[in-house]
Image 1 (tube, one colour):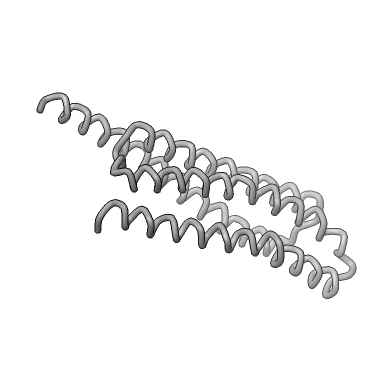
Image 2 (cartoon, rainbow, N blue to C red; image 1 turned 60 degrees about the vertical axis):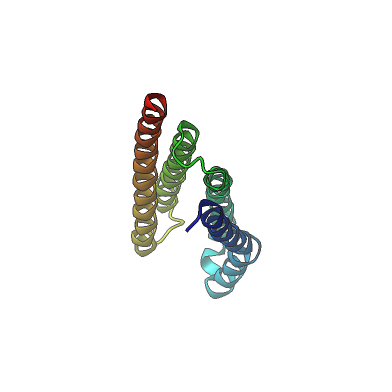
Length: 159
């Protein structure tokens, strides 16, 4: 697959993921809060803090989509293995780690404030585990992209 076609495919996936995230923020989160308030009126006060918390957790995700778009643009320019992409992957991994940390700590804080169910905390930790997996993968990509950029630079200098 040519680099420009590959870049376009990556951008389509990024745009689709971002669109799904926007739909979740605009429709799904408020709808879930409404249903939660209706089904569990005794815990209705949980809904607003959780909505705010989920919106705060969405910010690094959308920032990561911007970084991913920049990486895809570099791939389209046939600049896949560059220090710039290595740094962009590093930024992506930091965003993933920050979001994972905020979500994990926030879930525990909500549990301590009696605004989270222990069973949901287990599901929250599955999300944290997935975030840590994304962090590790993007950190590894950053490392390997940096190494490949150094090798390519050395190769360019010897020819």
